[in-house]
Amino acid sequence: MIDINEVNQLLQSPHSKNFVCRNLEFRPQNLAMFIAALSNMTEEYGYILIGASKNIDKYSIDGISDGFKIDVPIKRALSLLSEQPQIDFGSLNIEGKNVYAIKVRNISNEIFFKHAQNIESPTDLFIRDLYLACIKLQARKLYVNTTEDERNDFITDLLETNGYRIKDQTRRGSSASGKSSGEIDIFVEKDGMPFTIIEALNLDSLNTNYLDTHLDKIYSYDTAGNVFNVCLSYVKVKDFGSFWVRYCDYARKHEYPVMLISSDTNADKNYPCSDIRFMTTMHNRSGKNTFLYHMCVKIQET
Image (tube, rainbow, N blue to C red):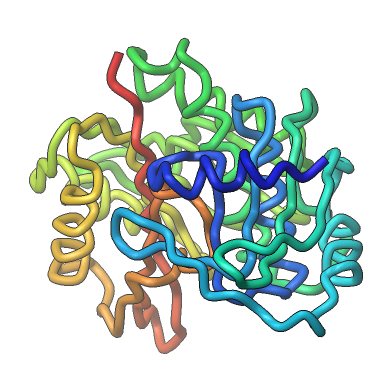
């Protein structure tokens, strides 16, 4: 049941992780992403509020027309998910304006996007599944103080349950010294072909020398020229927002082994969480455009 008092209370808490506000959002794919993210949170439930927006450290009520119907987009969104979460939805009147609220309850099963749906590219589907796996990692206190390999194992296990073929610590390509084959953190295959490489690292600051090594390793390991690869950083800092701004600035200026064409720091604009961010850089490799996803996941301090 939608509780207007709960919604009003969340509107007074701009840093709540179980609250997603969007001014106008009726695209089933994005609604599915928000629903899946909230259902995988550790909180008992969360809300998606359509007709409101966040401005730095507070929410504002924008309102939407009474004529908009959300039933069909929600049904389509639910059809895109591997499990059916428990939701309630309905319209509310807040500050004299009409808004739509969707209440999503936490469930025990992992929720991912169905790969049978051809609504998005395989790259988009994988990034969404990786994003959801990172949400689950953040919620596990066991992984607050642990090694990169242990975090990688957790991510790998979740991706494998969703049908990806994973090979971790695969010897492939060349090492940073160029003398022998290097060990890939996570190597993903699809239909028997190389699909993507995930190079992961633990960061407690913007250690540019350490980051440079991992960014360059991706291209020495990717011998085929994948459509996309991922640099996944587990970040343990107090000011994640400031870290992310500096990371984006550095990623745009880094001298990559292949030509940098452009960057997109708003690649995650349709993703709900403030403490998981990603951007993309586009590169020209042998005349084709390839992408590198830079995903940073905040690991909470103990």
